[in-house]
Image (tube, rainbow over all chains, first blue to last red):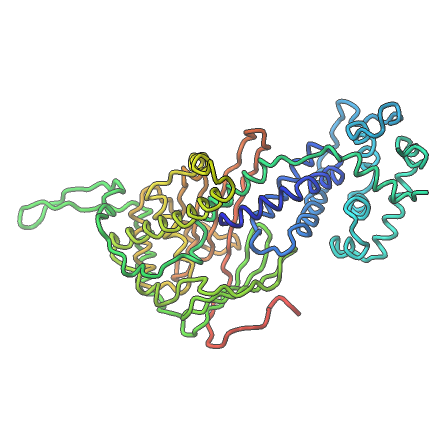
Length: 173
Length: 337
């Protein structure tokens, strides 16, 4: 990476870094782990910067791959004992539902009940606004799989007690 | 009435709207990559006129290695110092002899190299025009374009390599000059960027940047330049031979004669830790023929610092699987069905 490429790289991260970190947060359901995944993604991007024509697409794929790999590695290890409840599963409306800091634990807790593949599809479709075809290409599955998986995942999220209330339209805004 | 998907979209955006990425992460990663770039393989090295470079004032090649010398008695009663080579130097001198006896320039005009690049792995085929130095690249890997555009004069030509000096002092001088020219070119780009970014305080900005630049020694520069000249098949046998001798005379070079490259092939590993830039450069040479099997840059693990998370040790490597030459420019992408 020469100086010119370094500036272009920093420019890309300045423009897209927030979005990438938010995607990482939603994919990992863990803000601390998301920071690591985000940084690892940028490392891989920087290593190939001069040979990549669509950095955002590359980052989406790498984020997904890292999360899947980490999940597999975690599954091979004995389960860790939680020292405290990671997320407050109470009614989010007890606080100000518009505040991200209060809404986030609830949403991440609900998303963590999905499989990594379901989560990736939900995040790419409904957070990153990718079309079914784009998500299918990115994840290497068929468009039909994306459609059915997304539908099942949304239905499952609806059943989460902490999110059920938020799915009621009258509670929005 | 909003449907579930719209609500989910809204929830996910609201729940992460206060999540912001630190700009320091990108700057740190870009800085690391930039430092590495200064030492990446010699594609794009400006060698025009390098043959005319003079070897002025560099005569300390053999003196810097701390070789023990033993006075030995001669038949005429005088004594003469005998240089005792270390095991590493013996291996490098053997490679030098093998290189000198190696094949001369490739028979065809175009050299075709099949490579494997890590992290990845990405498969890559590089084609070099030995006459013009133009480069073509076909590659296969997730998220990267399959064809990389032609790079006009992206590599030194066979004639330019043939013009390199082969006396050690002159070669050392040329390599230092080459590295200094690269650094000066990179610095000029930085000056231009600083002036554009902050026309009033650009000198101050540059001073801050300069503080973070690694202060490499001439031995650091010689090793990195020499190591990354070796991989190119256009390098002449006499230059390769001289490069190994130069590496033998460079302090800090570590040689493992019984190593293997990342694809498992027996190799001689020649490496050196660059203390200033905090990474190790390594070249894996085929022991029985004059050919580089792999070049690698190994970065140590880093502890968390300046609010950034730590990093695992990482190795960036190019493995050269097959090298052939042809007189017809290959235009078909081997990775496309």
